[in-house]
Every structure is written in structure tokens, then in C-alpha cells.
Length: 385
Image 1 (cartoon, rainbow, N blue to C red):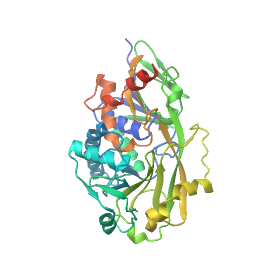
Image 2: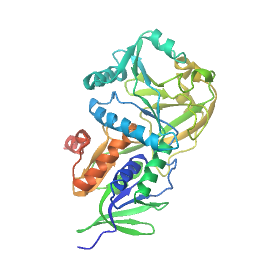
Image 3: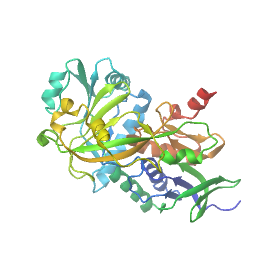
Image 4: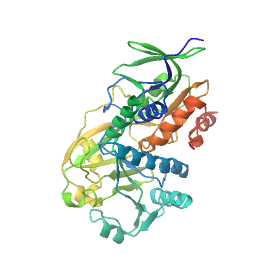
């Protein structure tokens, strides 16, 4: 058997790939990380200054243990870094009492014994004067919620992975992944590498490398906006938590307090989490227009009037949607040396520490201590059959 160049290669160094690279490198594993762009970039999904961190998960209570694990790791990473990685702010999730976002958050919190409050509109607005909450809505307050900065997080994850012995190969497009009997051959446009296993975390480019796997992965064009707030004193860190308002069960408008020390545009960030325009990641329309601005701002003046104001910056971002909106974390059914990380559907970044651990363990051991069984491929392959 010929020797391999690396025990593991991580393909794609956005948030998920960076977390896997970090988990492998800090274990002393010989790991190669490859990305077609130079980290940290704005061509994929892992950029835009801030991501909401929350644990009382309305998507599914099975995510909660990964959230608990990840929060402690984010806190440790922030403590080791000279940049802001994790900012505890608390979170206010606002919607109808019997709606999905409040109701399922409450269900997850009760099931897992998470600290939380259910606040009537008047009490929530007294605490956070920036908010305006309809009388028929309620506020779920999650005290453990906060903000993760994607740019800073990726920088620290990759930096610590390299410091532990990992190697980065960036600005080099991956062309083929070729399983052989005694290794997997990863070919880029300029080099080739023999590895024992691979972690594929290619975001919206993932499907191109899995032509025979009949699982839908849909890239979507999303928008991130920043405003010049009308009342900046009410939207500063410490005076406003991260917040979301339910448009309806499948869409939310969300935003952040203005925090010093974060990269990117000035102002208050606001966006929507919803299904959007299908696209190709290489040809996606990155120019923005008046319709994009209206979509981002719609409802802000009545919900968080202190944050409403002229749009100072508007950027595009990518989601890669799975069929059911849940992640895919599994080994390839035809070759268990290939570990798949895909379909994060706009809500994966907060879980990077847990996901990185799971992917490293799957690549090295074939199984993982992380509770990711509900994110396996079987649920999607069975549905097709």
C-alpha cells in the first residue's frame, strides 16, 4: 500500500470546512484544507459580519445538544482570540403565541431545561425600547443567545488549525475527487494529493462533485442589509438583543444590535430568513436593486423603528437548501472514506464547533460522539424510494 500525502483533506474552507480543519489539525492529524478562494471571502455562505446564535431551536429539539456544546466552544474560542468571535446578547424571538417560532422554541427549551422567559409585549418593550410588538404577539427571550462573527471565527479556526500542523491550499479550484483502492486522489487545477479520507464541505458547489447521489441541494440567492438607524442609542450592544419577527411560519425578519469591533459595513444589520431565488453559485446575480432593498426593509419601520433608516449597504449571500431544510452530515453510501457536510439551509453556522467535531470523528473513526444521527442521508434517500 502506497503512503498517503495526508490523512484527511477538507474540501471547502467556509465555516463548516474551517471547523473540520480545526478539529482535525488540533488533534494532531495531518490535514490538508483546500478552497478555490482565499479565506475569508464573500462568494459563498460564511460572511456578512454576524450570525445569530441560539439554542432553543424551533427547527427541531434534536439540535439543542449541539447548540449547548457549541456555545461553550465559541466562548473558549473568543477568549483565546484578540478579535470578537462570540458576543452574548440574549435573543428575542417574536411572533404569535401559537406560531412555529415561539411555540417550537418554547418546546425545545422545556424539553431540554434551557433558561428562558415568555414575555408579554409590554414587558418586552420596557426592557428593549427599540422593539414594537403587536398585542397579539409574544416574546420568547433566550438568555444564552448571541452573535457569532463569521469572518473572525473562520480566521481563528484556520489559524489554530495551521498552528497545530495543518496545511492550507487556497486560491486553487478543485477539479476531481477520485476514489482509488488505497487512497482518494484529490485533483486541483494545479496539483494532486493522495489522502486517506475527505471531508466535503463545498457549500453551493457540493452537488457538482456528487452527480450520482440523488439528493437535492438547491443554492439560493439571499440578501443582507445595513441601515443608518434613526435612534442609534436604542440599538447599541447592551440595549438590544438579537431579534427576529415571524412574518409567517416559513419566513422571519431578523436583526442585530450594533456591536463595535466587527468587520464590514457600518450601521445596523437586518435580513430575512426565507426561501429565495434559485441560482448557480458561479453566475448568481450579485448586483442589488430597489426590489432587494424593499424586501429587506419591509416591516422594519413598524417592528424596530429605532433601526429603520437609509440603507447604507446591501450584499448578497448564498444558502444551500436541502429538501427538508435540515443539514446532511454522513458518510457517502458508496465510499465511507468520503464524509459529506451539506445542505445547511441558512442556519448551520452557529453549530460549527459541534459540526467540526462530528466531521473529524466520522473521517477518522467512522462514527461520532456528536448526536447527528437525525441528520443522516437515510431520511432523504428513503423518502425518494
